[in-house]
Image (cartoon, rainbow over all chains, first blue to last red; front, top):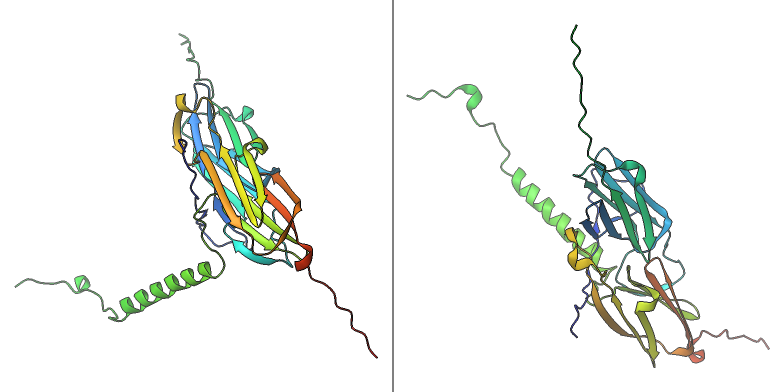
Length: 133
Length: 152
């Protein structure tokens, strides 16, 4: 086969600063980040997360993406094979560019989250007049 | 003669404390190994699968984020379930400047043999938020049957 064969990426659990009170698991989603002239785009792998379970925040220059799954493991079933865990996703980035916070958009498609961060216009040089008394 | 100030002398240390610390480290290590092993078998072939057995059916879940409905094929042949598909590249991927690139793109194909006889005519598959769920009914002869007991 000429095209690349996919490999399994093991999910990494988020290293918390403190412990959480609930026994829920948070994983680090794999991401692609790329930049065009006008925007920075973040794509994160979040399988099992519905679009209303996603929270994207930009606080100062820290971008936080969080996804909550509703894919609970069913009780009363016998597990035959268990190769992936379902859990929530959490990851933070420090954004180097100045971002136009008002116009951030996010969309969910087939378990991939796409966040579009438009770059802010560079501040125009302002001329300050000096008054002479 | 060199004069050593009282405060510069190394403090008294418990020589066994270091051994104790190492022992605790090993304990932690072995605990981690055990708790992973009994629950999860690591997947070697993409996509990772979870298979459950219910009373009348088998449920196969596969984690395939970024794969559309049109890019995946599910087939059942006898007791072998095959999942095939592609995670497509975007058309302009080669021209973009990537900061991070962790999501792999490419083909996958996985076949699993199911542990019980299934009914090939009642298979349904659903793709939701990057998780594919295939539900297969068990064959009639392996479904649990209630045995009624009579008294004389």
